[in-house]
Length: 217
Figure 1: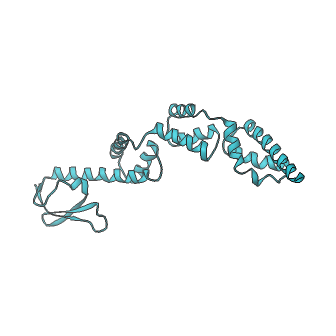
Figure 2: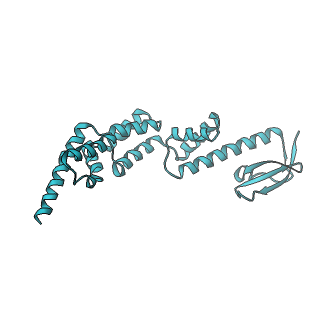
Figure 3: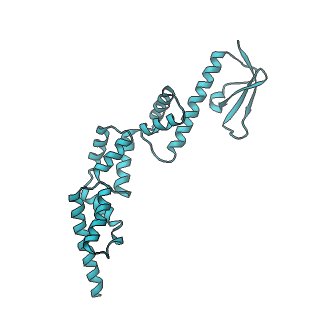
C-alpha cells in the first residue's frame, strides 16, 4: 500500500537532514541529497521507502567516513574497522569502501608511501618497526616492500636523526650511562644493536669534542 508524503521539513539541529512525514505523521529522516527528488504529494510504495532508507544509510556512512578521513589519511583496513565500530554491516561497509576508493580518498599504496615519508622525516625509526606499523594498518607486505624500496631508507641515517633529537639530554652523563639510555631509546624505535652502537660511538665522540672545545674557549 502506498503512502503520501505530506511534509518535508529541515531538521533544526542538522540542516543537512530532513524529516519526512507520510499520511500526516512523521515517518523517517533522510539526508538532503537522498531526499532531493521528493516533493509533498508524492506517493511512495513500501519498496521505495525501503530503498530510500538504504540509500540514506549508505550516504550517512559515507559522510561519517569522510569525517574520519579529515583528521589524517587512513588505510582501507582502518576504515573497515571504523565503520564496523559504528555499526555498519559488512555489505554496507564494502560499498562505502569501494566508493571512497573510486573517489580517491582511499589508496593503500599512497597511504603506505606517505606513512614511510612521515616517519623518516618527523619520527625516525627502524625499517623493521615501520613494517610492523604498516602491517597493523592492514597493508599487504608487497605494498610495504614497494614503498620502502622507493624511499630507499638508510638505517644509519634514520638512527642518527632520531638520536640527535634527544642526545642533548644525555650529553653530560658518563659514557656508560650515555650509551645505555640513548641505546635503549634507539632500540625501542626498531634499530638494531649494530646500527645503534655505531650511532652511539659517533655521538659520544661529538659530545666529547664539543665539551673540550667549550673548555678551551
